[in-house]
Length: 206
Image 1: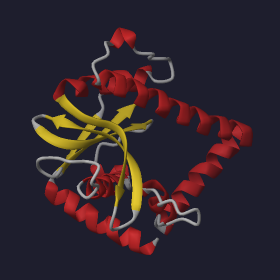
Image 2 (image 1 turned 90 degrees about the horizontal axis):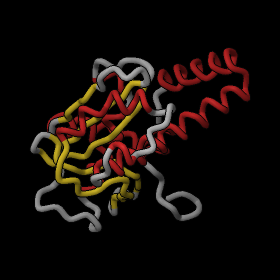
Image 3 (image 1 turned 30 degrees about the horizontal axis):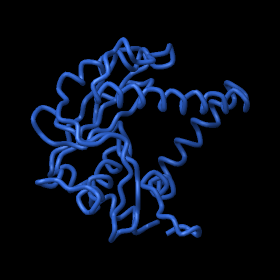
Image 4 (image 1 turned 90 degrees about the vertical axis):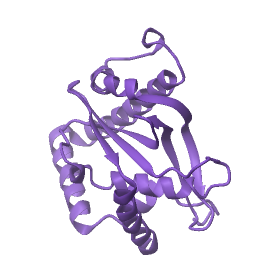
């Protein structure tokens, strides 16, 4: 637990245990952006990214709970991403939870997952991400699959969530700003076991 007694989040743990290579790439990107936009411009970019994520997740949540598209506040900030992922919704049904906090009672970490629902007839944990660049291979998504494995591990141990069968599958949706079709990665139980091992190593490192 953190000094205030709260449990550390999955994103915090992944951030603190990032590989030297990933950390260097992130630092390089930040440096380049600050040179390009200035410090204030870079802060504005971060704020805009946060706002976009918040708006997009709010619209997704409303849509999954039955709102019509005409009722959603799809601003210019998210219209490309919305177009990118809109076809994915046709494969989603029987939504169990959206934007819910989960915690692992034994391994002592917490996080907020995006959605648990049926995707193409399998109960899955679904996560929505945005990107400017195409991520045409799963390895281009960096720690995203590790994050999903961590959430599923917590979900299956958290007494606040009861399922007839444990959740063993995940779906990672990468939506693009230019509106091109989202990449959808379905993670099998076998893949998630491998990412779970990576997660427990990172947790131990933390």
